[in-house]
Length: 170
Image (cartoon, rainbow, N blue to C red; front, side, top):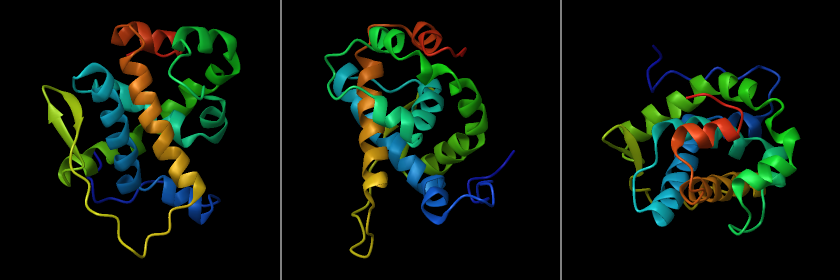
């Protein structure tokens, strides 16, 4: 099993910004934002399995750009109206499984994420360094993570049903 300090396996052809987006530290911050969003709607910790759905969706630009702009949209209705989102999702989830696991381990090891009865809660984030210059893509990934966390919490579906709506199995 990989440790949190092993570098993620990112294909060599991936550019610098994309490889930064697959960095376990950055991915753990995306999951932190998802946990914040989830807790704001459900007042509970986010199920661990949602991390494996949220991270591939938040990092995938076409999915991010297709997400509704408000929480008013029903997740089930949106998924029904945008079936192309699910076409390659299972493959993306499988491909990013190792990166998601490393992000969770990193987040837990550095206090960005907190485990609560097997679920995830947001930990504390250190102040952003002044030298960090986030890109628009970076910001959009964080926003998508927060939105997806909140949307999952507000879907009204149990964990297995929500994953099934996305075409996934727990």
